[in-house]
Amino acid sequence: MGLAAALPKGPSHRFKCAFGLVCSSGLLAGAWLTSAEAAGERITVTTRQINFSVLEPERRTFGELRYLGGLVLKSDDERFGGLSGLVLTRQGQRLLAVSDRGWWLSADLSFAQGTVSGLENARLGPLVNSKGQRFGRKSLQDAEALATFGAGERRGLLVGYERRPRMQLYQVDSEGFVGKPRAISVPRAMKKGPNNKELEAIGRFGAGPNAGKYIALSERYLDANGNIKGWLWRPGRKAEPFVIRRRRTYSVTDMAILRGGDVAILERRLGFLKLPGMAIRLIKAADLKRGATVDARLLMEATAPSELVDNMEGLSAHRLENGDLVFSLISDDNYDRGLQRTVFYQFAWPAALQ
Image (cartoon, rainbow, N blue to C red; front, side, top):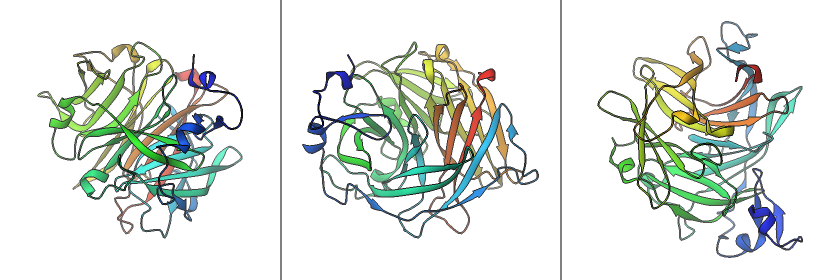
């Protein structure tokens, strides 16, 4: 029996939350609730539509994916930026993102003729600790990953933190994060990698051969052969390490678990004397197992300056009624508004190619 079926009926006990979740009013009205500040506040975010290709503005096909549209996001609020993890509702109408300075952002997406055209009802608030307080040090604020947490248990959103590698489960309502988080145990090996190159992507499988397991990918914690380390695990059980064969000099920045347990990964190339690049690759569910060296199928790759690639760090996926899968991406501007931007892109993977 799922959580929704198990809850008492009636408006005082059950209501719809954001992100396709169902929340118990008892949970939200009790220990989870904190101050009005932690619930977030309205901010103004302006948007401008952009094409992805610089040299061919009308181009829509990139590898196996079709470009649907994109936005440049701006705000005068000094807390806005650094967005490193992303989820959308199942219908793709609303987003929630986290930043590497410990803030969350929620907003509605608006569309015109099937293309994303703007952002509305934006709210921003702090990620809080188990005492309901904002994390005081940058090393504790560094949220890099975001994923939905699903059926049969207390539902919410998982947040992964990098510099002090850990995972927290938060509750959400129609306006964003609410209340105090619950810690989720992670493999010890995850905490032994190079500084600021560890936990970068997280998730929990709802179906497929790894149903019920958590997954985490490092940004650039490499094995002796230069492959990127990852882990599968169930709380209280021994971790199942695996590695992903690295593509050139790319690093993992996020992932999205797809229907049946396949995993899409977002990769980024950025650094001194390196043109910014991004790639989306696919890992088959059956390949994810203890000790495996996983090869991932390339779905698309793009590089600057021919494409408007920035520091792409957030990835989410949702499916359309026709079977196409929509990948949504967001960039981390590192709070350097003079050199970088916050961009939001959407690409479709046609059902016929899946």
